[in-house]
Length: 316
Image (cartoon, rainbow, N blue to C red; front, side, top):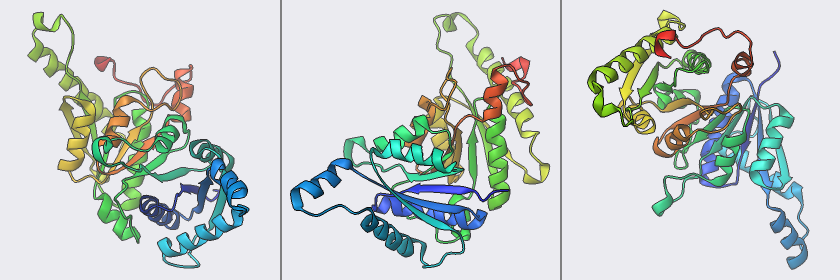
């Protein structure tokens, strides 16, 4: 197997320092190459050249990256490979381009939360990356200082929450959660939220009976997914009723889950486009969020190939 690659864009803020600690811990544990990236604004580099007489030198930024890494990672010569990239352009464009060029396996970046009335919404760069990435993204909370060791990471994660929509992609999310559960030696919880019926015909029907039936079918479908996980991991199940994003955020808080593994795909899309539930979970849940783009095998299955797991007919 080739050495995996972790890409971590930083802007030298405290938020990106926390993301870098997560990226370094992951790279060390999995023997990955950590690529630390800085993106300079082209207007800033032009202003330096024209207005101050100082010529912008990418090597100066690279030296700052090296100093940042030595400070955050805590050692000058880590046990894993570490490289540095300095580019000029629009941050989201350059991060996405670099992830493709490097064939990165993971992007680790902070959500860059704001203050005041807009504190629930994260930075436009992170949002754009999440909307267009074909690589999993670990989004870190802006006030999270990050782990120093793998033991710190286990203590921060505690449990993994995996909200699924019971589409064919759900199996991929469960398998990723299973691998993380094994690697970190932490339990995981699979969850599905049944949204309340909203229809002019609801009042004419026996709503309690219908809702109970929907909950029962969801429980059966989630149980079939969990059956694909080895028994020794003993994954738990939650079937809730209500607003999906709010119920997921509540479950993360109540069950002390420090990591949420969620799909990026919006309804009806044929590519990695962030759905509204994923967006709101990122805003509401004060946890790590691993956002997964669609698995290539699932996309192929939807184009006519066979899938290894499909939603049980009773739930469709």
